[in-house]
Amino acid sequence: MKKLIKLSFVASFLLMSLMAFGQTPQFPIVKGFGGIYEIPEATERPDGTLEYKILVDLTSPSEDNKQVSRFVDNIARMMNLHGLAGVTKDRLHVKVIIHGGGIFSLLNHENYQKRFEVENPNLAVFEALKEAGADIMVCGQSLIARNIKPADLWPGVRVAHSALTTITTYVPQGYILLKF
Image 1: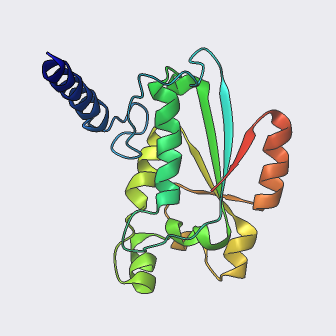
Image 2: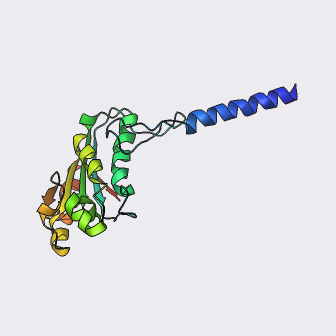
């Protein structure tokens, strides 16, 4: 009898593990990028009834220029995590300011190819982020410091005066600041 109970316990544990870890990633807001998973036992999660105003300060360069930057994909993950918790697209206000080494993720295919010998894998993520409602901006000061022209970039990005003034503009308006 003890052996049957032990076997039943092990089978139940394995089934629960498969259910938790064998999930297919979900993309509730940013389609195709930033895949996330439901965590049924989570007791701390976003409140689906609130408005969220988030400013992402992205300065980190890609770790592998031939792959989607994990920092760019993390923006999609953050948006999808809110969506999975019930925050609707119209209540999720995301602005992204990219500067420093992160600006290379915004190069158009032609300029990325010249620099890294592959097409820019991040552009599809930026397209999906924009489609999901994210406002993508690049620091004009970083462009000058790196001798990059706006024409060298993905056409969906807006040029900001600076990352510093973008942060000081939106934080007082109630945007929380995340640093990637």
